[in-house]
Length: 135
Image 1 (cartoon, rainbow, N blue to C red):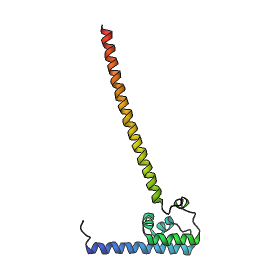
Image 2 (image 1 turned 120 degrees about the vertical axis):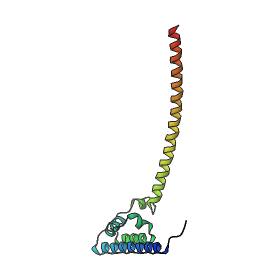
Image 3 (image 1 turned 180 degrees about the vertical axis):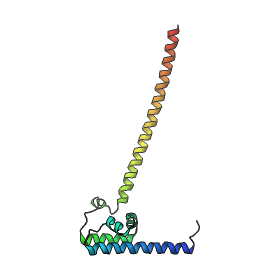
Image 4 (image 1 turned 90 degrees about the vertical axis):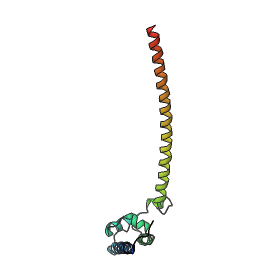
C-alpha cells in the first residue's frame, strides 16, 4: 500500500482538528447551558458521529469526566455490566449469533438429507406399488 501524498495527509489532519474543535465546543456549550452530557448529546451538538467520539480516546475521556462530574446522565448499559465499552457486548452477541447460525445450518443440512432419504424411499414404494397393481 502506497503512503498518502502530503496534501491528503494535511487535509486529513485539518479535518480531524476541525471535528475535534467542534466536539470540544459542543461539550463546553452543553456544560455551560447545564444540559445533560452524553455522547449522543455531544455528537448532535457538534454534528459528528457518536462512533467518532467513542473512538477518540481523548474526546471519550473528556466526555466521561464531564459526565461523571455532573452526574447528570444515567449510567450507560455497558457500565452496568462492568464493561467500559459496548464493543465487547457487540462481539459477544455476534459470536453467539454465529454459533446459532452454524447450529441452524447443521440442522438444516441434516434435515435435508433425511428428506432426501424419505423421498427416495417414497419413490421406491410407489414404484413397487405400481408394479404390484399391474400384475
